[in-house]
Length: 609
Ligand code: AGP
Image 1: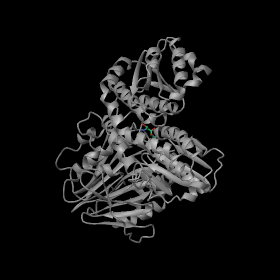
Image 2: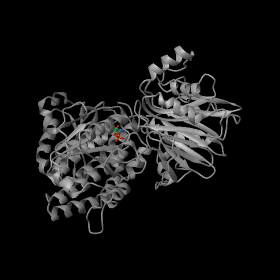
Image 3: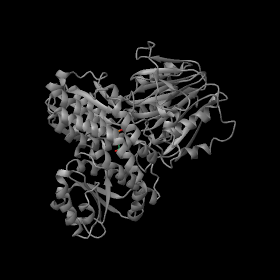
Image 4: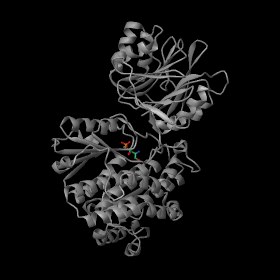
């Protein structure tokens, strides 16, 4: 996934674009570039690596303009090199473009342009064909040239283009990749995501699929695929400008870990009425729909999938409906049994993960009702769902997901409670008990955050381990997968999660004095079995960090050391158990000198299959 930004106004475009790119670096950060119309042609500057490398190449005052476009890249076609970085220009250097997405038929277009028009390509990318196509059709009308160019393209794209002969406008187009227009006074922005423009605007237009946008400094016009202008409601952004800043934290990840009490509370309370009933006035799923569902699929990727592992058990327990769960990249190639009594729940922080989006489309084509749990407002997955449960986590910038995960869990509980109470499969007393426990979570998360120093010390002692296992049973099993992913994706340690009961079926062969095991034992009904598992592991000289509810001191007796979470009912323990694992991963990565917010090879949302 890449990030695009465009600015048009009366101020320094260079400064605004660089600032916007820095806020989009989480979308991809292996190279970056900027294009400005200067003295009748387009000047393009690019750099490999972080945005600051680009800044050092554009410092002279002459390189500036009141309009321009910029790009930060996560390489899909072609290595992270300067030649492959965006923006890309045509041969005459009077057109420049930035692109997020994939042009599936780029090879065919590339061959045609080279053969028929002698176009010489400078990069290995799919995106470069867009610049040459627009250049080919350009005759003084950039909008017309962009429309002709996209008519030749297949795939997913959010493109912004400028022309040297029309320095008073930016033309952008969207298909299956996010695009927003930031509404200013005397200036306007185009960008992949709201954080890029949050510092300058509070209102945006969410651009829909197959729409084209023309921005001048005083106007934004949106056209549908037939060239008709579209009246779009302004979307007021509720996030504050600092929401996409690190504030006084060293990393976005640490800030976002600490935001969890607040965003858990907001996600929960946003859905509760005074009487404790769940408010779903924006959800069109009817009582009859819910009574008729006979199967639920939860489909997602990565951390969102791990939230689904908890969601499966919670919804089955509360709503008494069978819940299947699958990673999106596998779901599409199974023989699924979907009909119009199937509920398909897609979970996605970005709402742009292509694996999840394609799985959603597959399920929809088979008649399933689509409910998505999404953080990014107006994202592709949200738009293509029948109903959306928004996690009110605010912008999650760190690649390693934390607050999105815990707010996704809150949505799982809300869905379970709502469906259980609607279907009469849970009594009022249990409903009220779970709700009270959910309301108490922010304070309990806060309490865990107070023990951050203890976990930091622990991380200092274990940061050298090259193999770490995470184990648990029941709900703890799903959380152990999330704890393992957190550690591996930011510290590059080989971590591995496995259901504790499975250890004896082979994996325990790996246990020795070099092994560290994080054993989750928060489920009262499985506590004794977990204590036995820990004893088995210690008997093989492995090192164990036990994690249990306060007062369960047996775990500390059998482990090398223990982490405790506040008392709670088993069902909501995952929201608390994951917090120490997030903190542990963060400080281990810090000790190992890793980049934390932008881990190698990763991007915040994977918009390729
Ligand atoms: C989690 O820390 C990773 N960043 C990654 O696994 C992520 O959860 C996955 O790519 C799904 O992203 P989504 O929630 O935006 O769909």
